[in-house]
Image (tube, rainbow, N blue to C red; front, side, top):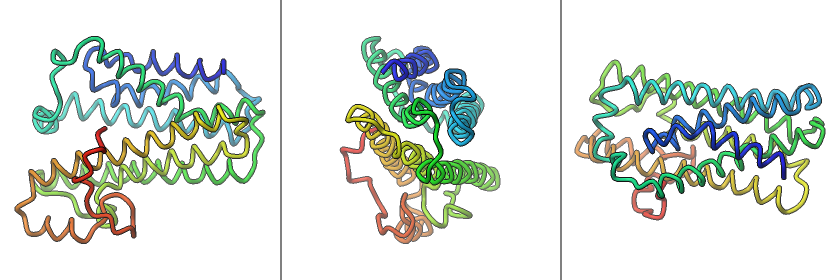
Length: 264
């Protein structure tokens, strides 16, 4: 319990940048919190964690730093992105202080739960088993997939800023970056399966995993709505969305727009 409270405190501090701009609680602050938690875990357990467990914590640092850098560049330097988001995101003044505190606390709790499998593994001595090795491999693959998708999207948008992206990984699913993130956290959850002790640890790990999957589907829905507004009259886009799954490869789920409960 004490270790989990440390993760929560670290997440609260690292994501507090959201008080400057509330969306940063769930964007820049998200990446910063995950990276800071990874550093905290390495500092707390050090060499006692075992090589594979230390690598899992190091992956959190790499993941968080990459995400924070990407989002910070996009939000602070990309004029086109900010113009697109003006109509979608409320201004800071329209969000009360009480709501900001609620977002801050709930987001930090989610980040602590997402990373808790790494804590539970390290606290149990960091022993290496099949669950840890498989989880580590899935997380590495997810991080590589998400990174590649972001690079491909940026390159495609530089070539043709006005066209939707349907090349590279975007031929497989329409949101390969979100798929990569889901795989990263699937690996994190799997890595702790061999050491979860008691209902509290299972609940924390499941809350974090289910929570981030829900957020990713909600993000895919927001993106779909935005792209439908931008490209919906383009016949090529219409063919693309009819034939390319939105998030899960080989699963014929082509739209989540109608699922209004996916609010994230």
